[in-house]
Image 1 (cartoon, rainbow, N blue to C red):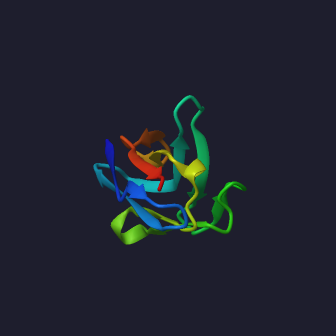
Image 2 (image 1 turned 180 degrees about the vertical axis):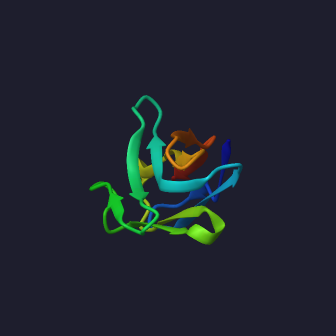
Image 3 (image 1 turned 90 degrees about the vertical axis):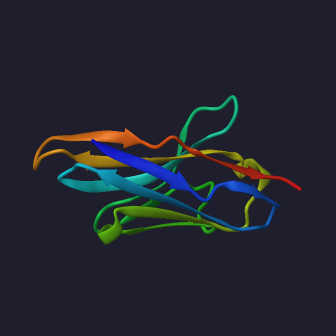
Length: 120
């Protein structure tokens, strides 16, 4: 079973930057797609950005041009560089990974989340 551990959240002023990290560990065959989701109070969880093992990315329109997703396959780690932060970016950010237990058997794993608060 894969474990995902996020880090890098915190309090930041509007216009500032933060970098989130999510490291996958444990027993697995390989990690395929990884991504970041967020959930603000009273709202549904939404996709922020995703990245394939080959580096193809999908970024939400709401953060396009401000957030960048990247990954280090050797470290099984995905990053989210967040810039020009806005108060509406305030949410708990969750890491997500498609983990293969065997060559053909996969499952989706979630991290515990890291809180990002954008406020003066």
